Image (cartoon, rainbow, N blue to C red):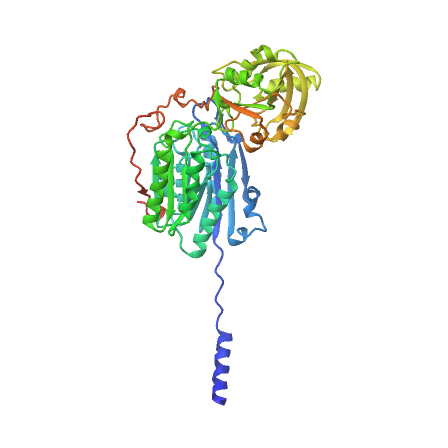
Length: 519
């Protein structure tokens, strides 16, 4: 017994003196990205000033799931570099692209090495003289961080996934809702997919399946609020529940840029080749099978027909989407054609005519005149068509200044001028009007107006909930919804619906090599 106690004591002493296992160090993860939709069919260009950039720790303010108290924030050591976001617009200048990418790369060099990188992009950036900017960007990032770093990419479903973007990213996902009510949820999924792979030691997925689908449709025909988009995207999440699948995604693509990468894509990532390829092929075939079922998310008509309906309606507010110059899709935002046509209508000539709110037209010189006149003063001048005058010249506005608001983050200065029964919002810089407060802050009451005309495509949730009735007007501009009028020259053909009688495409999955397996 005495010997047993002595042996036990020796074992306990040895155990207490044994070196303790060191806790595993947290993974080192960088954050970078640029996001913009840019139409190549608009004469507008986007420079550095168009981007709102966040650098360093300021980037965390963009991601609630990486708040200082969040679980995900504590799962890694984070190295945020530069994340830039711009309102959709014209093609990005090469100088702006090089400046923003160059700064990102320099910041990435400061804290090498990295275990992972969260690459937060849109996927529809066009740059002067450069095809596939996101593909170029990620290759240059790879040159800094190396082929072993796990890159997880988050995208808008209206982005484009080229082969080289697919090659150089390891994990990839995109939104599953349009409008994009799941944007932050999708970004969080991209981050957590990466964290899970790093913590488990599984690292890069064994398989990435990529399928180009020869379909190019505008977002206004592919909303997930209605079928077939709703049912199509409902098939994505179940694929991710399969054993051996990490994530699955369908990209509609961006219709208003004339580049070879612009088309729909399906991608699935995971560790089981059969599950990954079959899931990708199933989603691609499902998309192709419903191609003829996509219709505009709301009724469409000419502007004249839209105004006739709105004037005759007793529903308030009757919303009209001025689609062709939608600044949130890439339009210049200063096409005056629609406003010019509205002001021609006899119904709106009198102050007592149907109340119409028009949002909006940029006109910095007109804004200066309104500021000088003051609220209640008379003002006369032109606005709009400084960038895109292809369809109508600057519009003449002569009326009473109803409101002035300074300090807006996008518009800088906004004024409301009443011309007849039309309340025109004129801004110093272009701004999308998506929230009720955008109107009420200017003293306008959109719910009581007879007609509200907004430069937008499908209505964002707040405007959608406000509408009493709604029609989308087929108006001209850089994001014309009539794709056949755009005159594509460089996209791959055949392409549905431009080539309606095209043969059945090859929708077999193409396995993409891992970034550390490229030649």
